[in-house]
Image (tube, rainbow, N blue to C red; front, side, top):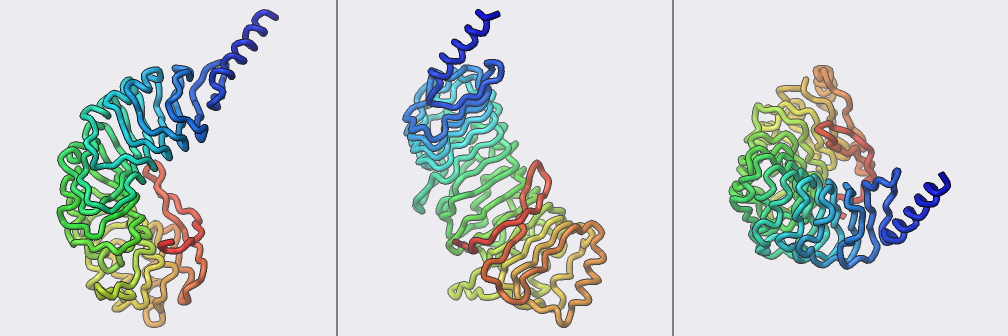
Length: 384
C-alpha cells in the first residue's frame, strides 16, 4: 500500500514537471483539459497528455501552425488559438483532429484572401463552430480564398466582412451552416449580390460592428429565405434602410429582429431622425416576430399609429422600444389596447422616454441553444 502511494506521488511529480508550462487539472490521472493560455509560447507543446479533449493556447506568441503539430492530440474536441500572431497554416497542421468540434483562430493575422493550401481543413470532419474573426485589420479589397468549403458539417462561423466582399462557390457548399456572424466590418456598400454565394440554409445573421455608415441595397437578404434571427445591433445602418430590406420575409415567422442603436444622422444620404410611417412598416408589420428590438433609434414621431400596425401581435414575446423620443399623446390608448392582444407577451421595455439619458441601461437579447434570453446590459455608447 505504501509503495502504491509513493508511486502515485512520483507520477504526479513527474507529470507536474513535464506539464509545468500548462495548467492541467487531473482526475485520477485522467487529463481532459490543458490550459496553456498566456504562457509566452512560440510553438505548440508536444509533451501534453495525448488524451486531452480541450486545449487552450490563446494569448501566446504562436506565429505559424506547422505540419502535424497536433498529431499527438487526436481526441481534441475544443481548440483555442485566438489572440496569437498566426500568419501561416501548414496543409497538415490539423491532421488527426477528426473529433474537433470547436476551433477559434480569432485575433490573429490570417488574411482571408491568402491562398491557403488546399486540404488544410479537410481533417476537421466534425467541426461545428469556426471563429476566424478579427483577423482583417485593413479595409482593402479582398476576395475570400480561405478554404472553408472543406468544413462540410460546420454549423456556425464567425468571420470578418471585408470591403467589396466576394465569397465564392466554397461558401455555397456549406450546406449545414446555420449561424453566420460578421465581426470586423470594413464594408461600405452591401449590394444585392454580396451574399449570393452564401448557402440558403442560414438561420441567424449577425452584423453588429459596422461603425462607418453602410449603404444597403434592398435585395441584400434575398439569399437567406430561411432566416430566423437578424441582428444589426449598433451597426451604422439607419432604421429607414433596415426596414426596407425586410421585404423577403413578408408573411413569415422570425425569432428575433434586433435593430437597436442602428440610427445616426447622415446628411449626405438625407437620413436624419426617424419618423415612423405605415409605409416604412409595411414589410415588418406582416412578420410574425417573437423578439423585436427598436431601442435607441432616434424615433421622434409615429404617424398613423404605425407601431401598432402589426398583423400578428399574438407572436410577440419581447419588445424593446426604450431610449427613443416619440410621444404617445394621440395614440397611447390604442397602444395599450394593442398590448392586450399580445397573448404571449413576456416583457415590453418602454423606458427612457421622452428625454435622452446619458447612460441608459438596455436589455440585451442573447441566443443560447436556440432560446432567447433577455439580460441587463450597461450602455457604453452606440459606436464607442
